[in-house]
Image (cartoon, rainbow over all chains, first blue to last red; front, side, top):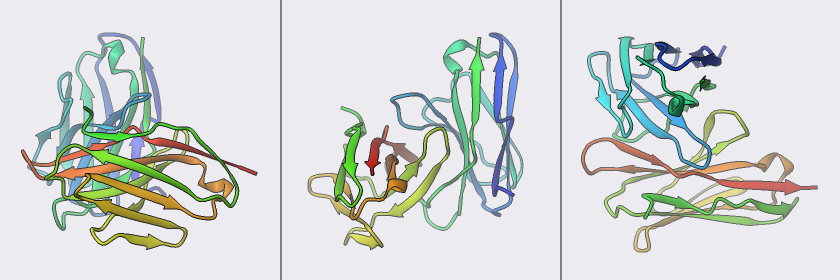
Length: 114
Length: 111
């Protein structure tokens, strides 16, 4: 089983719909992240959480919200999806020793907004 | 200027060749550096961290040049399985947590 699991793997939906992407991990890491990846661009950080009570905005948080339900779960919501949110979304985790630790990624969710 | 810049490539090399990639970063206060590998339509995976004194892991060598603000990745004796996109990642210390991913350099190793 994967250490970082994202659901769904693929999703096609319509403009204006509410969408939730879920991420769970068995690595026991405190830190979790949500990124999006667009062709020709690097991964961009949407939100991150350093523990269950901690939520922080990343570079591109507008139009997104998150919930850290437990140490192992971090979900990303698009309240009213728009076409330019079509992208590949990755959840990641990292250890909490030190500020910057290598991150471990889930398989990704390919999201298309029509 | 982008915060982290990489030559997008593609680099097309034969098996057994040596290939090098550079990555430049704009913030001199950056403190952590990594190379990740990403296969087509897959998740990024850590290849190696980059330490100030440079470091090697098998056929892979990473170096950091703080004065010129770049990191490099050298791959010796390229294998077909090295074909992937290589992502440069920089962690900054200013303004809180900030991890910046480069857009990646594509490598194709041919038989």
